[in-house]
Amino acid sequence: MAKEDAEPDDDTEDEDGEEGGKNKGGLKKKLLFIGLPVLVVLLLGTAAALMFLGGDKESADAEHATVAGEEGHEGAEGDAHGAPAPVFYELPPIYANIVDDEGETAVLKLVVLLEVKDEETVAKIEPVLPRIVDRYQGFLRELRMEDVKGSAGYYRLKLELLRRVNQAVAPVHVNDLTIDTLLVN
Image (cartoon, rainbow, N blue to C red):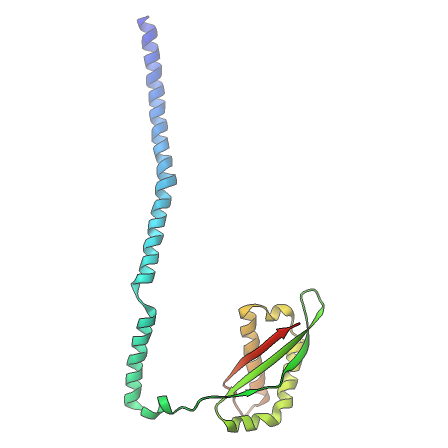
């Protein structure tokens, strides 16, 4: 009987040894499944804190602008405050047929404001207004709906319209362009 008692003890020791192995394996799994995500979260939190608390970009830009502004006032006093406000000239609404995603036509309405430096430039632009409208019509009729979608499409459209108006009024320069209305029906 002593031998029978000894055998189960050996078995329990083997089981304990296996259970001990399972506990060690279980501990490793716990470290991997709990400890690793905690470590990742801590690292991400530290990185986020460093980004947000590392430096205030707005205050740094404001300080830079103040220093640059002070230097600019020493050199040329009237340039910063004496610059005239830009003049905006509104083009008449332009309508064009464009093709939508399904191959059907849609009507695009576009109202554009041109930014120029003074009223004299507006007087030079008005006689060539039919040329501007013609350039815009030819360009807009070739557009597809996906060309106008999203902020990137809007930005590319604006750049292309500005390029075409500057070509149409060649000796005169248009500084910028504002799309007042962009409607697709």
